[in-house]
Length: 164
Image 1 (cartoon, one colour):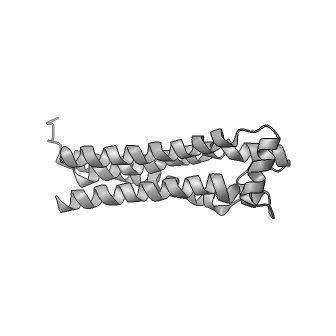
Image 2: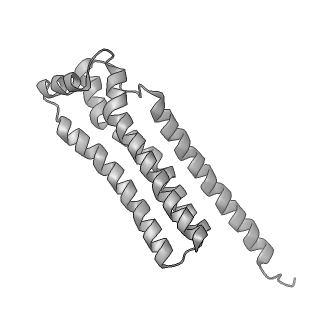
């Protein structure tokens, strides 16, 4: 029980940190790095003057972060109620983080493309934090591969032998 609770709490915390970094990177750090010397307020004002919907961009990114956090909360609650093994719960948390790389890439298009279009800068990531998110997601994916391979090997070892 204690191990399951620990995995549930840590899983939600890790997903929350990932979601917070993702939102902060897309909404604050990347725009500031793309347009050095400007404040976030002036960047937003410039985008609005160019007809960009900054509010929709912000809502899009925050919604994506909240969806990830909600999924983590569901995994934790269902896992605890159904008494799922810590490995099963951990696997679901790894999957959420692994998929987070695609979500982080997508959230970069919200405000990031508006900044790129309005300021004439490249649309690529302008901070190392996007790379940190992608690397974290890749690590989670590799963790899923490891857990799957381990389960496959254990399954073969415990399977009854079939006479030839």
